[in-house]
Amino acid sequence: MTTQDAPRRRRLTWLWWLIGIVVVLGVLVVVADIAGRAYAEGRVADEIESRLPAGVEGDVDVTIGGGSFLAQLASGRIDQVDLDAPSLVANGVPFSAHVTATGVPTDLTKPVEHATGTFALDQAAVDSVVTLPEGASLQLGDGTVSYDQTGEFLGIQLGYTVTGEVTAQGTSVRIEPTGAELTQGSNALDVSGLLDRVIGSAVTVCVAQYLPQGVSLQTLEVTPGQASVVATLDDFVLDESTLSTLGTC
Image (cartoon, rainbow, N blue to C red):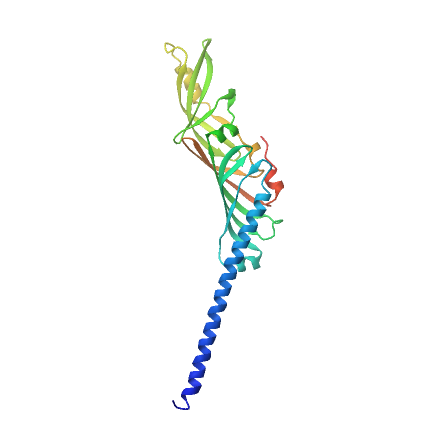
């Protein structure tokens, strides 16, 4: 080895040490980021569960999205938070929920920018929320709903089943009848006029009293035995007051 080789080897040794230190620091930052994210997810889940409205119970899983958690934490705002609650119960009625919130402040006294929630309710839950005129019950079908009604035609009490399509309209659910069939009464009567009037009469059901104030229903899909609702909420503070202050009809 020449006298010129020794300094070169020392420089290479220091270079490898420097690379090693950078790699270790990078690993430590990643580990700290992952650990901090996991800790924060647990804390947020605990906070949300403690702030659920009275009568609502269940576990909530939290996932914090976006880029580096430490960088988001330093900025005071989390890009995206996903909440999963597959087994919630509200006053004895089971339902599931998935909520995606964006622009979530680390200071929970400040407002969240936007949240979109998908809520799935079974037939029993729908029966407890949607009240139709004259005590009719709503049956969930494949993209349609049906309900039984009674009416008087030429002095004769008749029963009929109405089939319709449902849409979400802010704080109301609108049922647009598409068909009606006689289920009780004389088949000898021509009741087409009555059924035509039924088909032409939409039913709007207000559900604001079941929703936190400011929540807007966007879509409503039905399948046999289940209804899935997508709702949104903007600029809200995640506290007990927000969740427990319901709208009015």
